[in-house]
Image (cartoon, rainbow, N blue to C red; front, side, top):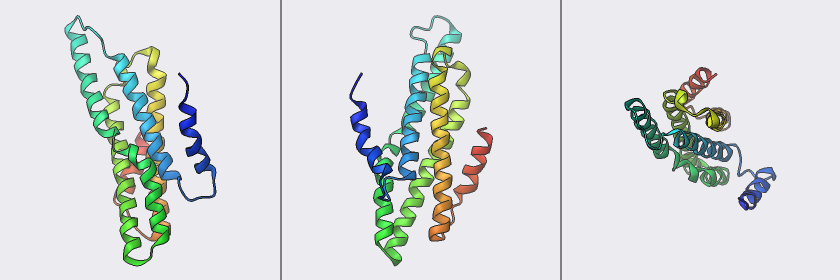
Length: 182
């Protein structure tokens, strides 16, 4: 399997540049997408192909339901990888009501991403013991990436509070989830 690195090269160059975007919000969205993909892979791999016993059928049903939930949560943040930077550029170029509108849009994006991270946290707690040992490292790395995305949301909300004076109701909830996620 080759060719993935060329897709990331432009992104990583932009990330390392002096431009304001992509930045932390974009990276949080990317971490979420990478994490959910790894978690999904681990769960799919752990699903029994032909469950022969009622216990395996029950396990299969439970894992399949979690996979569906994770898929429903993972699609939209993929667009946030670019959207976060676009919104930030608008924030920096406008004043007054227009700027406030984009700050609110940024807050909503971050809140949505953080909420999705929290849901992944709760979904995966229920199935971790069902993950096959041979792929548990992918599952754990996926969880760590989603946790990193949640931490990115916290840091972005704190930065927006300092820079723009906006308060977020979700900030405390996200911080508490991170404490539980130790």
